[in-house]
Image 1: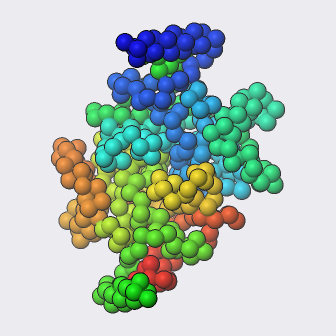
Image 2 (image 1 turned 60 degrees about the horizontal axis):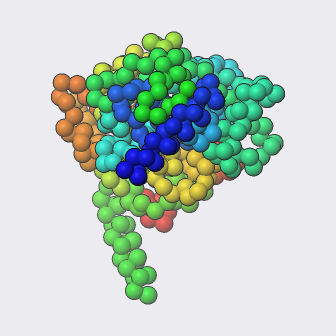
Length: 206
Length: 206
């Protein structure tokens, strides 16, 4: 009973905190039920700190070019779903994006460690590809400040990266979502559903 | 002295085994010196079992589409550098590749666990992108049998994947290599150097 009471108090606390913020935030780190596509997708993006960011490489004949990057969608356990990056044009990815914004970010559950002994390609070991436009943020914008806090809180060493490399903040404007988290093919999931997941079992608050 | 003697015997054994095989094989799982770009790249590809495979998505306006996949470049610790895949056209990646072969495979050292507390985007946490053509193998070819052994030995559950999904063997024909494993930008590394790495400290045998 003590445990149940504790859960109730925490739940109510999360409920009230939620009403102070108009945007959806992820407050639980427990893996959601795969049936809830939006919660599952948001959990995967929020709990992971790195993925592969794909751009179109004009130098390589228009080939799709993937690059390992760190990202963040918000403060730890307060992800908002939109991935932000800290990139330099010394690297092909940012250079490619400034020529052609078409991009995708691919993230796997496998490195989080919750897939057990499943193969990384097993459909129940979830994976997501967010496709859209990779855009540079205005350094003086409110969103750039949000991106900086989101990134530096999850990736503390970024703050010390060389100033001379001219790192800049980018975001992925999501247009399409490809999510596999169970058998049976990709889960239907719109960008709107992803950005505003329905509250269930207190994993998300609006 | 006993340890040194043991190392000598193992080294000589590897040396002689090596001359029985005309292709370069990775026999050591210890991380090579980052200065040796070819050894470092081959180690990274051989030790990893999954990555992000990129194709051009005609359904998404030609966007680069990354997908989490399992791969193998050979039997465990006997990698030959060329990544093989087991894909179904029920999935966008194989479907895309059959329309447009341009592709890349991106692999990170981070999930191997040898990056310590470094950020996944830290240049000393190595990463590689192999760019080229993703091609379907003839199921009756010797190479398809090699791919099957390479994949099923590292990914045992593949053997039980549904026959009705018509999984097929693909390989990436590598045309360009992007490797970062130290500070100072990408390491120059040709495909030939990658496929035929120089023998050093018995990590590779020819």
